[in-house]
Length: 214
Image 1 (cartoon, rainbow, N blue to C red):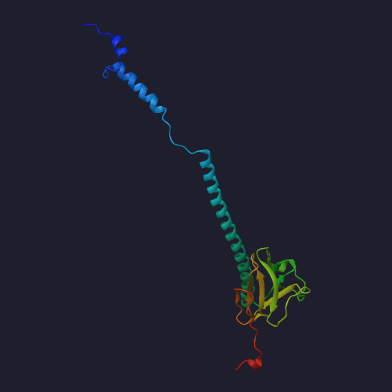
Image 2: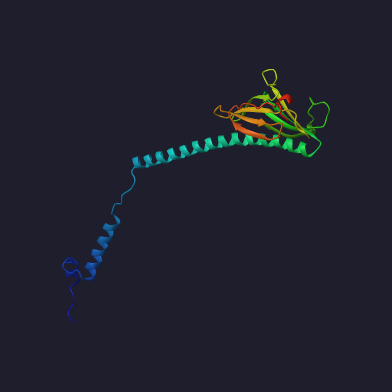
């Protein structure tokens, strides 16, 4: 058997690409070079720009959500007031009981109670059915009845009384939203309907008997 010179193979690796020693060394060099290859990455400036853009979108979303919540809060409060007024009218129509919705402008609140005492000025704790406060997003500024009685600085409490025959007086409750835009809760004493309308609407006054053609 002819002996093989391993020294020649180690010193002349480039000339023997099929040699086991040469191919192993060549493969090792390629692997080492491949692991040191540089990949593109974000720089610090690019990261700061991305963070600022994302923060801007988050801020805009929060502002839109805040505005939506405010609008919903005003709408929710006015609808709750309308529902309370309608509850009083419906309960009075179905029973022989009397109900009263008290609008307190000074305290920015309203109360629904069932009248059980001859003394109408006294509100008993057990009579209270609903008691709510207005907020800065929904403020009542004045109340006008259909007999032209109006709340002012000296008279800050308005009372809507409902009996089996309907409302004792109709009128409107004027409120302001967060943009100082007026809305009117209109109480119609004839058909007992309570509606919310945009603006400080003109109140329809009931006609006198001599104005009715029948």
